[in-house]
Amino acid sequence: MKQFVSYRTVSSDPKYKADCHRGAAHLRAVFKSFGATTETLSTDESYNPVILARFRGNPATRANRKTILFYGHYDVIPADDQQRKWIVDPFNMQGIDGYLYGRGASDNKGPIMAAIYAAAELNAEQALDSDIVFLIEGEEECGSRGFAKVIQQNKHLVGHIDWILIANSYWLDDYNPCLTYGLRGVIHATVQIESRHPDLHSGVDGSALLDESLKDLVMLLAKLTGTHGVVNIPGFYEPILKLTEAEEQHYADITRTLLERNPSLGDPEVLAMSLMRRWREASLTIHRFTTSGPENSTIIPRLARAAISVRLVPNQTAAEIAESLVNFLETEFEQLGSQNKLSINIDLQAEPWLGDFNNEMYKTLEKAIMDVWGPFQRRRSSAPAVRAVFDGVLDSTTFKSVPATSSTLANSSAIPENDSDDDSKPNHLSEAEGDRVDPPSSIRRPLYIREGGSIPAIRFLEKEFNAPAAQLPCGQASDNAHLDNERLRLVNLYKSKEIFKRVFRDLPKK
Image 1 (cartoon, one colour):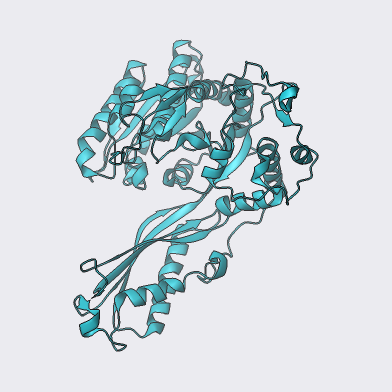
Image 2 (image 1 turned 180 degrees about the horizontal axis):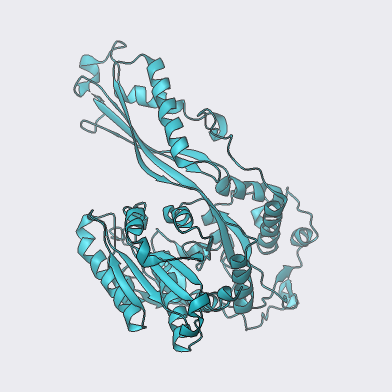
């Protein structure tokens, strides 16, 4: 894994193209060293290759052998560390206090290695009764450029798939194992308005008669959303699925578990609503403005451009929403009566995904998580306000609700020193110190969660191979994926390998 992390597989920067190919070659060599058959799949475009590898199951089971597809990505986002915020060289992975620090350690090189070792160990033990196919791409951080095309061109090499497993996400906090069953989709778009006139001086040429590109752009984008972020595109909310009783129970489990440990997160209903806003509600964001001309306060720019994104939820279709977005902007721009020119480019589309958390794959994953992580000890405080949480009553005057962002959940769930990373160690905090320890719980059931982010390949793979997908988060909320000091807890790496091993072994028997 340390060697894997050392390759600067940054897909967004052409100067790292050679590093990406070296990283892909290293990954293929790892597969070969464990006895897997491998192929390097390339498209006509200059995109990074996809590594296809296969561990073949027991020949005696060939007639009825099932196939599990594991998807991941070896590319990472940049980590130049010009501001010296990293505590290690981002591409020289180091272990510090039980964590592995390095770019890609959590997203997604660590989970890939855990899955490879799981398949390799089963293979060595002659206990692999299924085929395990790996598709590891090198363009996920750039929207999976070329991935769909290369898979469609080489579908005959991949073969029939029964289940799809992904490990490209994180726990909701730093303490509770999770299973992810939903992701939002995304549309990235660029909106540009261009004037016929060149860049001008506002004092010399500015007047009410002049159609200014940046003014037009601001007025146009202001039409997209209303109060509290409501999206004004006609029909935008109509396809969205209603909350079911089964899913509502998941939110109740999540809020109860989080508040047991972190009462400061506030009212359970507010916390649940905050999570729903992140996971199952569509949204629109304006990311940045760029203009032509020098950067000073007197310029009337000839050209103004903005980057926007629309996060989609299951039952919304990326193509339909993109078309509605373009039509809405064009209609609203016409009403401005401007002489400027509007252009809209859809830069990326990714479909939302919703898994079936009642199927055999999720049941197998849940059992594997419970077996591997085992029982854990819950702590209860003797403070009255915290007791109120356990009694099902939360004093909203005592606790101020905070938005359930990934950072607040990570920061509020830091495991105390007495809550050892090793779950076999007892918690020795005494009642005299203000807390008491409950007996170990008999189960450590995972939380079923959704995520607000997008992974373009998941829904594509489901449709292409007519197989259900599930997602196992390996890392914690505080892993800092895409941020400085990305890390993966060593305990999570090894336990993820054991979970993969059980799933690769047990799922084909279902």
